[in-house]
Length: 262
Image (tube, helix red, strand yellow):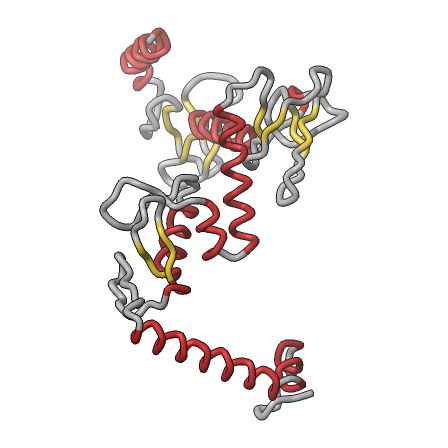
């Protein structure tokens, strides 16, 4: 099936076309029901005001409360809760001026099921950790925690969103049958290559004439490049003969010895 612009319709669009009449009828009925509830609330003085956005046309069904009774609309509480979730916190303070918070049953009314389940699970894990149970361990990749068997070398996370298996000794993902010291992790590779690069740069020299790089394997410090240019391996200065090394060379050696001691 193709739409007006000739693009293929996805499953959602196809479903809408099949049930368009029923969907529009449901929307109309829902809108009429809301208007009737709004008029009834006006007549009976039941309209409420949100203490966050100050919308004063709220019917009772649109309101939620903090533990001390402050009134808010569901949209404001949902937005505030999502902000707290983004900070990975588990306490949802009142959006008004009181020092109370929102109960989790209230959050369940405003959050979608998947989001609420994630928050509720995090809260449960936090309470378990705060209980200071002996032998309790937490998955390095999520909030899941449990007390594994003493002989287990692998921590098997049971959080459906994670399910990682972790080495209890090094904290990285399971590497069985290899031992921890046999694994080279990404951060180790970065450190090693950085050190190797610094060591290489410390030995490399650049010709003052052609800029070709080279290093000394053995011999004296008077180096001759393939282009014919001569230079001192220690200081990099251009030289013609060995006079440069009679005095300056000694001073450089003393300086290097001093730096090595420090």
